[in-house]
Image (cartoon, rainbow, N blue to C red):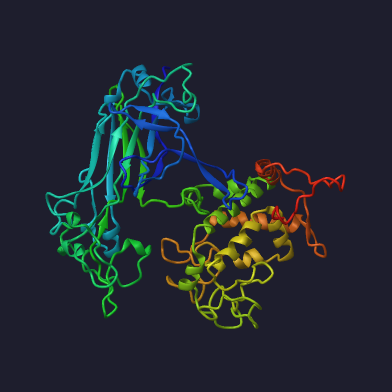
Length: 565
């Protein structure tokens, strides 16, 4: 039986776009291991093959010379590409026998159709204000979704309006907010043996589309363009102050704290009431539906989906978060426990090392001193307060709160004492925590910690979604990760599968690692990953010339003091 296209899919199925005011999209880059031995970073960003969209809608690959994140004061937006793929096979055959193939004009022609049979539909919405006050009339987006045919290679702007039929539309009739644009890229023949550097890395024949996010603009009612009392100033430029203040978002007073705090703009008055300024932005979530109508009587179109989340810029692109979007998805996937259990001890250890490297990178970009000052919970009772404060520690403000010298969770054996803030060291808690986490990136140091203090990690690391007595959306204990917030405003934690996999490795260490406590060393061989990493770091260091003794006193002697030794 003849083969045909049995299904289609979009790669990637999920992408995060980042707003930016520049007209030039962000060049592609990848994370690589830091090549500076004197740098605290584990990873850095390195240029990678980038696609420039030409005037006719086709693309030209090029390799940037550097990673540029800004054009002057304007941030470059992240505008992801999506490829469309086909699964081909014989009708009635099992899915296991289907083959993945790039969807190209040549493949469509093979099955008696062309790009006009393809349709891409974009349904972009912003629901933040609507969710805050449970009012669906405040949703704004593409009504109806924007639909583009596969042979249309123009740029199509996604104009957001209020839902049709609402009594008081927040975006008045005749006005709109651009949420970005969509463009189907024009395919071109893939070169063969042309000598192009990108020939083996990039395929320009596959049918792909690109989402360009908004510019990062703020909108509000006319009142938001007027100067407010205090330090708030003007929230919205006058040209964007056209929203209807009677729609329900302007003047709304929340009954509880908003997290993340920067998604809610308000002015605190003398009675401590914080009514909303009615401000919104051009972030959005976009649902992509790709349809392919193949010839044949009675055949229903093949359908695939993708999702795009357009958010604010990331100001630390060379720091990997310890909790990623992929981790969240895996936490909600099927057979997560089975996949984790199938890992070998070496694979599990490699994953733990990567996790602690990511934790260090996350710590390196946050002001934990400020987080502790604002978010540390007061400590009371013998279970939380030390009998005596840590000697020589100067983290005392606020007195007897989480992570101070009175905190029973603090371990003076594993965390350096915190000095007073100085001009040279303005963030002493940050420096102390970074020093500690830099050390336990090394698996042998982490194993030594576990062997000498078997319950330390279980005590210190917060269980998934755990909230202790006395914690709220404002304050928390120093349990790891300290003082950071989840999307529900409560303490941030590892995902379920991450926590379980980490504790499985901890149990393995306890049963397999032998410690000579009197010598303070672990009797275990260095891991292959650690050995390779050590060799790469040593290879980057400049060669050291051996220092020899002078053979004859009659030779001139150079002063070591003059050389700065």
